[in-house]
Image 1: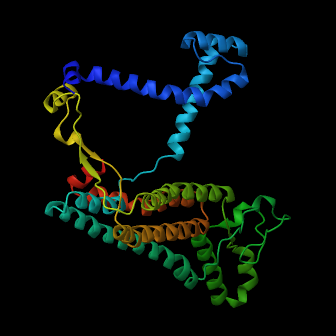
Image 2: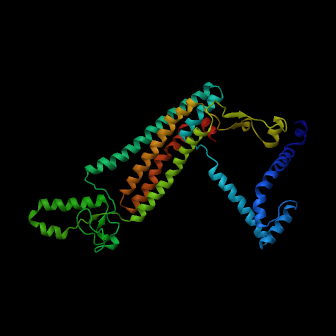
Length: 367
């Protein structure tokens, strides 16, 4: 340790790199020898430059193209490892409530951190209430208020208006043929025009033929089928990130051991004194504090399952269900595009709650 401290961080890094290469070489050689021999390529005693040159000649390509193919293989290996071998937590009130008690437990429950953990659970409950309230109002509008107003389900009314008047599905909810897109309106416009016509028929029953001939309320229908389809797809794609964060929590609870392991450690490198390291690398005391996802006691796993994961999953299911229903019942092109951006606000509410309600200390833990 003393000799390394005199040489500095550069010498330590070189030594670790040399040791890593020495340990990795037998594994690398044994894993790649078969594939290289099958292709008739060179591997072993030659230097890297000579081996690459000979392999390129055997494949009948330039050394530059061979180098590009090797680099592409390295990139693909790295991308596969990133996509399938990693999971983590996000910056939301759910994750704060998941992490803060474990940090408090690691520090033997100091009073200041206990306050932050309790505060995280308080805001978690408030976030549940707000998200459920908004979802309840959307469901009430779609399944209760619209039925009281006599609004039928939009379904695919007007989706094939370009094939009318002689094509299939050209009869609207009012019982008349769409004829063309000029007779198709959204719900508010159609119900108003229908109300005016019916009112005139009640007031002037003797003028029924003239009123029916002069006033055409049109039909209620979907302005563009494919815009609605694309917006539903975009909405489901936007909510999948929230589902992934929930699955990451499940994965963590399932994989980490059922014992109390510390999630936070104070680690100072040994290649020099702490003061030298802080001066050379421009570090502070907090840079030596390392956070790791480690073991969770079984009682905390059960508590997190019932207070965080299950409510979060329920909110996701309700958001996806009511969001798709809301978009399917939106007839106008502009309305469905605006609504798809507004619906994602519900699932992002927990992140906004985290930023605006959590104190700076909790946000620092998240970073």
